[in-house]
Length: 276
Image (cartoon, rainbow, N blue to C red):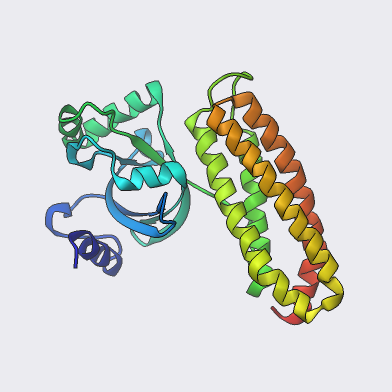
């Protein structure tokens, strides 16, 4: 068993408490999705509370190595992560701090944990400070597939609303890391949701209710149209143009909200009638 795996198992068996070199330290388990492999990877990391105890931050120190840790590369590509802290287990968007904010936070980190200052002195790279921003979706006590659909749709509605409230800057202004990471996390979830519906849920329901096959084809067409919009949003992110990102988000958001309303109106009664 690897050292990390032993720490992970001890953490989970003891409500986040571990011994050895980490005894007394505040740890989280951070699960990222591989940028290339698409597989989940869990790493035990020291964490620091932000100024005034607000926010949870992890630091990409890699013990002062000249390379960023793998988990950092993963979250740049797929910002939606899972965080285990003590007995809590929650989803978050990982957002690296930028510019003056990063300098302020790193100074705070070093005051709290001076070893990070030594790691920075060992390398020329700027050690990242990453905030783990908890996501919030609409809750539902309903069980089964219907409840799952309601919860995912609630998450998507909540996230698109929050993203559209983030500043995008002037038309040609660079896209800030906050907006970039939340956009990518949103698209990550939307892709997974639509793929699951197209490959599993819709074919199964069409088998149960053949008269709805045309409706499911129309939903599939809408999924493909939104996938095209996501590609355009991704291009705007790559061009690093805040104004273009905002325009693409607004168009995608309007289309998505109408799609979710239409899907729920037809789909939820069918799922509930089936007891699914």
